[in-house]
Image 1 (cartoon, rainbow, N blue to C red):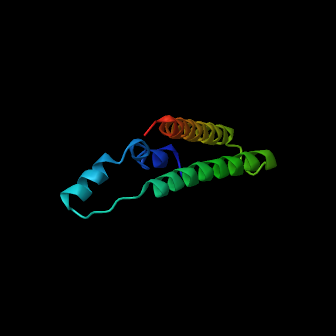
Image 2: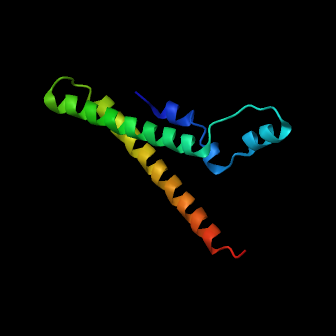
Image 3: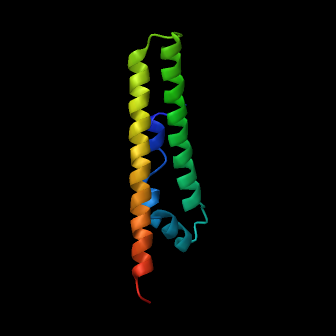
Length: 105
């Protein structure tokens, strides 16, 4: 199940700009990277997996299957932080889109 380390490997800088892949294409290297939609989809899936993992751990603690309360709380905090990051990225993307719409051609 994904952890914060896996969220970091999604290369969040791809959400800001695709400079590296654009440079590779313009240089003719032909190496294709993930497109923007795939990066967003992978990030959302990682956040969803973190939410599911935290739910499972809390359920195990409530049902008495495990006494690892600290692990359940850590999983909850990781899920909360990853969800907040996702919301902040969404808000920034929305602001950027709205700014582009306001631009006069």
